[in-house]
Length: 187
Ligand SMILES: Nc1ncnc2c1ncn2[C@@H]1O[C@H](COP(=O)(O)OP(=O)(O)O)[C@@H](O)[C@H]1O
Ligand SMILES: C[C@@](O)(CCOP(=O)(O)OP(=O)(O)O)CC(=O)O
Image 1 (cartoon, rainbow, N blue to C red):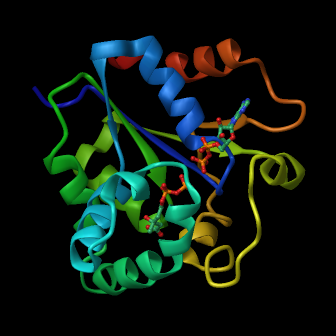
Image 2 (tube, rainbow, N blue to C red; image 1 turned 180 degrees about the vertical axis):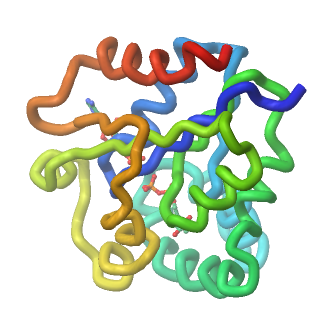
């Protein structure tokens, strides 16, 4: 069974991509599968450099220590094949009606998913003001926050849904309802 809806989530570091997609998964339970484009990146990088894969997956300082190099290495692969990690991430995905891709970062990620899953795709952008992101542990880093990994979608505005997950944002249940409304006609 291929997915019936593919939800693409993007947003800057500490905007709450994992927080909101984890809550969505708790609501949808076994109807959904979370896909992370960064999972194959972290897997290969851990193997090549003898690092702890699970620590790279977690929301830890360990991940931040290795982020810059993972960005540089993964971009060198993307230059030759922009869909490489999207394809790898989906290859391992389970057969569930709803796919939640929790870490869309580049226009080429959106292009790959739209070319592959066409009308099933919905794009969701998570926003949070910088103060809130800082309170969640964000510190600006040169080479990370001013490159494509964090900035390529700054001039993309064609979202199906934008969620404020910072100051003045909706309650969690209302945020979830707005996402579920996107799936309504597809399930
Ligand atoms: N709406 C929210 N309310 C409370 N805490 C939040 C909220 N959104 C995110 N967080 C917390 O902020 C931190 C960063 O969120 P995370 O989802 O890991 O961001 P991202 O995946 O975008 O880098 C986590 O500790 C998370 O639990
Ligand atoms: C090398 C990366 O894939 C690392 C991404 O790791 P996460 O997706 O875990 O990061 P945040 O949730 O935003 O904190 C970035 C990239 O440019 O591909």
